Image (cartoon, rainbow, N blue to C red; front, side):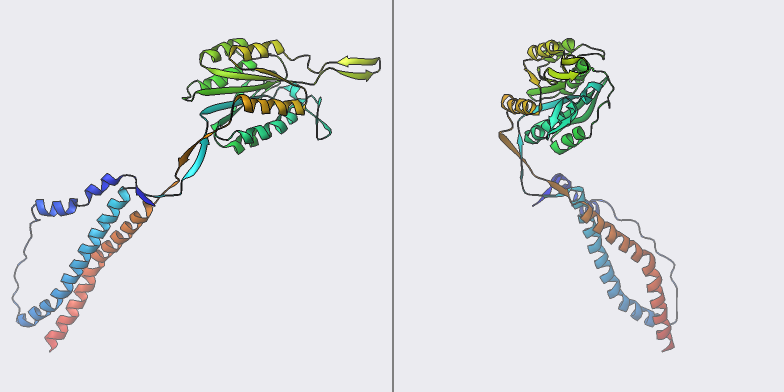
Length: 346
């Protein structure tokens, strides 16, 4: 259907008529009289052209009113309203903060039967989680030595998944600024007017960089009602055969689980431990239960502006009227002169 965004603009339609009724007419100037011996022939010619002139004036008046009508219609902002589109919403803003420090390149996970580094597994597990978050506004923070907002809060889940998939280890530096990542998330979420503000933070290390500690940032987050779920990445201790015999190696020795647990507890969230792809996928499924996806549905109607059409027609008619006003007197004068010569010759 067609809808007028500014229908009050139609009140301007009678303005030209009111101006003609209320304003005094422009003064007319009369030229000097000329006596000619063939007055009767000229008067006959004049009477013959009066009808044409009246018709031209009538058409000019109609075209002028039509131009004004089109201009007022364009000012009223006509829009085409499409069919209602459903948009499930949950009133939740959710940020993913992913560690890109140098240790995320460690290949202690398996993906499709092949050794894979930690970031590759995070990407694989996060794709389905992001796709399931229908109705949430999602954002992406990448952090290493510094924290960066890679994707602002948006309903475009594909954009979040794509930018996460394009991230690489070391993009934000080799160290780990967990506190700065929480602080950046708080900066983006604290001014939000939604009730549920959630941060999911994935890291495999301890805080080694940044201006604020994770506990300090978590305290501020708790004061502003932001909930933080922390996920510690890294494989379990494993046995390796070396030159000196079998040894127990712990790939997650640098993981500061105590700090991650404290951050989650201070903000009303939970701490999870991911030791492989299966456990990380299970964590995401549990997060779906802790932070349910949308149930309510809102509707919006796409709008397409149509003002350009009446405006274009108005400009076209105005251009034709201007061209006619400029060139018609020349054409009319030529015709009258030719007719006058014919009448005199008779």
